Figure 1 (cartoon, one colour):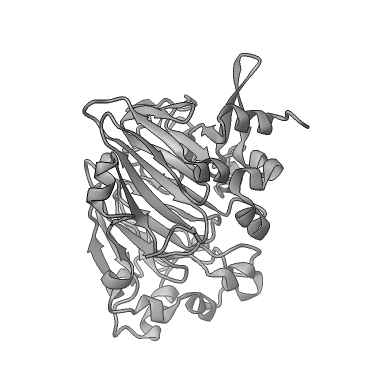
Figure 2: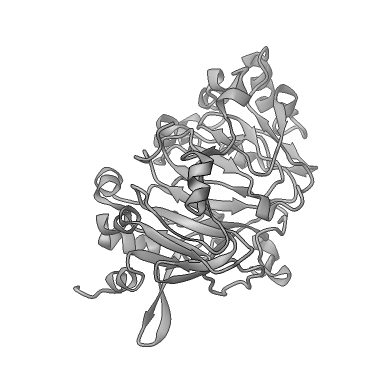
Length: 403
């Protein structure tokens, strides 16, 4: 296997893998049309699949979209050249074969996989108030818990959609009986659970941390969302934006022997976390420069932590100033997506397409191996006026994250 496809792909990119876009529809959502897909292609998978409102990044996690889910839906393909042709293999297969050569022994030895992915989710309206189970509750249905985080990139938020506010948690003073009553009323139309929650206005260029066990109803901004590699959730709101949520989604994530048991649904809620009166202080994230701004700008770049409150993943926004060449070192592997600008990164061209057809390849998404990240990635900005801006998503316990 000295020159398997996986090895060939990694060698061709000198430690950096080129990824193809992976688009994911959701039958219960209306696309916000801000993820650069061609206007004719948002419903390209057919009416019953719904519109495409997500693009997944660096994903080895299959999308859970019911019986109609497409083959390899949600899985990121790696693009490389073989016999003069562009061919594709799955990032999951590359990592399964090359292991620590791609993600580093630190992550491979602990997880035997790439344990996170990121995505854009892009909805015209708000999502229902819902919850992700923690590891303990998710284990009951053979899944892993799901922490996640949000960042609202200015480049894809020229409009905020219908409802750019997100409900987080449960308003202090609410009783458990009141929430349980909402859950029991799920099938009676509007269960009004957000009456007991507070919404925050969403601000481009900022983000939020959402641990498992926290109720949240994401607003209608186009959201960059790093998360643990899991698709476990339950919807606790029965009516959102005048659309009825099917009852099966309330019991999604409930073990067979507890179906119909409202106490089980209540146990999934981390009550202390949800009723924290200091949500702004503990969950809101304003970008934090990794070093003093003046120092970085003098070197031709600006690097900021944008998601930093979870130990399951982290994310940075890297800006390379016009006309600059910089070499950036990280202690961990990462996936990245281009938000603005064009130039070179290592051996690759990097650019930010303004419109992408379904199935079209791009040069805007890559995965940087741990070895390449540690040695340093050289980025050249070819524009005299436009900055390069990229978002970088890292796995658990990033050694560089010391706040």
